[in-house]
Image (cartoon, rainbow, N blue to C red; front, side, top):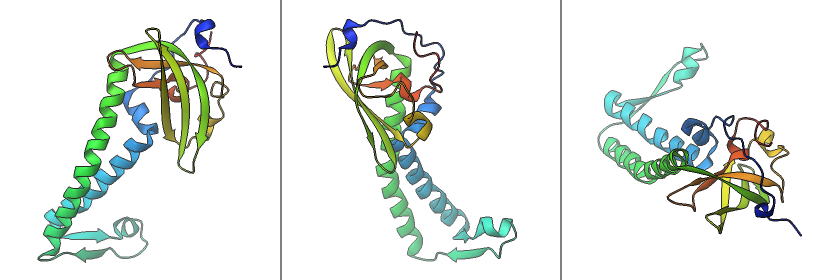
Length: 191
């Protein structure tokens, strides 16, 4: 039977983790995918609206690998493309905004609490950690999912049953991140 982190208090050093909003977002799979969709909608739509065409093969022609072709849009095609880009923006931009606000709240109103890893999960794109943590005498469960990162997956501090440090949003204790998952290195997290 695994021991509860509550029965094994430990001193937590958090001064070396260097967590930033950009760093958290760069690992977060929903933030990455939603930002790609936002860029994939905005860039072509703005090119079509300003130029009237898409420069297909632009990067190849820059590096001397052929001619730059143009995919020209006319008439009813332009409003259709803009409507499609608007639809994608309506779906992807709120997701990205939600992830930014989620991590921003955790960084601004952080409470450091002990926790314990329940399980690790792997998919071709995602590495996730299921964990439990204690905040104000109550147990909460959490799940953090990041894009696949083999260095983080191999960290000795990320094993089932391992004690972890959770950074919890003081105003929404259901929102948290595992410090050992998002921190830059394995060093400096344990006494």
